[in-house]
Amino acid sequence: MTTTAGTESPVSVLTTGLDTRVAALRALYEDLHAHPELSFQEVRTAGVIAAHLRTQGWTVSEGVGGTGVVGVLDNGAGPVVLLRADMDGLPVREETGLPYASVRTGIDAEGTVVPVMHACGHDMHVTCLLGATAQLAAHREGWHGTVVAVFQPAEEVGGAPAMIADGFLERFPRAQVCLGQHVQPAPVGFVGTRPGAVMVAADNLRILLHGRGGHGSAPELTVDPIVLAAAVVLRLQTVVSREVGASERAVVTVGSIHAGTKENIIPDTAELRITIRTETPAVRARVLAAVERIVRAESAASGAVEEPEITVINTFPVTVNDPDATATVLGALTETFGDQRVFTLPQPFNGSEDFSTFGTALEVPSVFWHFGGADPAAFAGLDIADLLADGLPDTIPVNHSPRYAPVPEPTIQIGVTALLAAASPWLCGA
Ligand code: ZN
Ligand code: ZN
Image 1 (cartoon, helix red, strand yellow):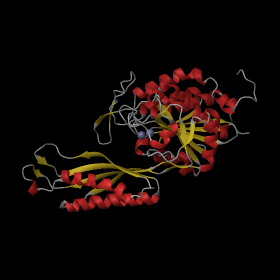
Image 2 (cartoon, helix red, strand yellow; image 1 turned 60 degrees about the horizontal axis):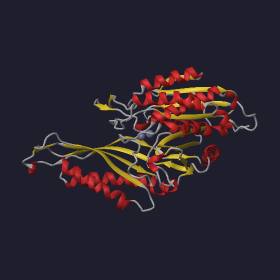
Image 3 (cartoon, helix red, strand yellow; image 1 turned 120 degrees about the vertical axis):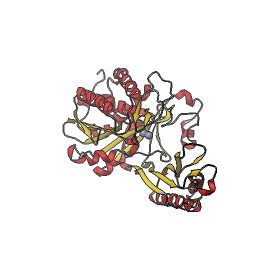
Image 4 (tube, helix red, strand yellow; image 1 turned 90 degrees about the horizontal axis):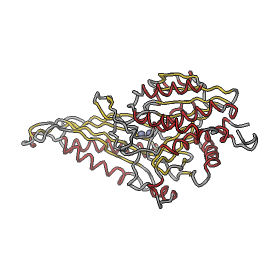
């Protein structure tokens, strides 16, 4: 180190040498991106993570909650901080055209072969956390306490509870704060969070509509589940527009619709899969009730002889940031990146997360923030303040898109630095 002790900020000690580590982290990122795995199938990914952690000197536990990996680094007396990354890919066929694009397939929970892509950026989360664990191990003089690095499986299907159910609370040092981050299609350099709700609740449902199949030439002898499904889809659009107040937030999206095999056969059933996003328990209850009421009423209106089946695929709680801990993290991030790059979000993101599972189970504060990974060139002439108010231009690929791809640099360096900066008030205190 060239600067003298006392003039260096705690974060600059923790990030010392990070620039020389970036090339290796970029290679790691490209390898992870080219080898995505579906939820709870992150075997290769977990192996890569465990090997890195062991090399860095962390105590490693594998197979936590399925494919989860937990690293613990004890650096003397002091606070215990939990840092979390998720590691699963999605059943999406990649269309980024990148040299390290995924061409891999996997077998989903229904036994179907599907393309797999890191379309949500969880490969970036793993890379950034492994960068942070490397920095923490290399600069033990700059902090004290214990860090628990959590590499969680299956975020896309709500996998965090599986780690808790696997004895997480008893097996690992109990953290006093839980910290996590998500890469977003905001310009690289942007970092944002807010106290209170930072991501919304999600309820994902499968709806099986029962009609009565028959010949396509004789619809009068059938109950057509395709027409029934079409009516349900359209009527569901009225839930948000007619039953949710203008100042409240909710989304109802039918993301999947399947029925039939051939043009002249009316099938027996149609299946819809829908996702519901809400910010408060009251709106959540109202929207769920409206969806069920519409599905049942449209089935009855079609003359269906059998009741529709509504099953819960999975649910995600509202991601809530502790106000005091969030103020602490925002302060550290602002000190590190400057107030032109760190923002207090005006409202929660409409995405959902199971990150808050850890803070809730441990009964400690948690803070989750977003960081940009999109090429700034795509935002030429756009102001971040306008983006926060108006949302992204629709030309920018977003998470879960087959064209979503963060730029590796400087996203990796910012993501590593953000983790270290956010943890520094706890780890580098007097
Ligand atoms: Zn996602
Ligand atoms: Zn995600």
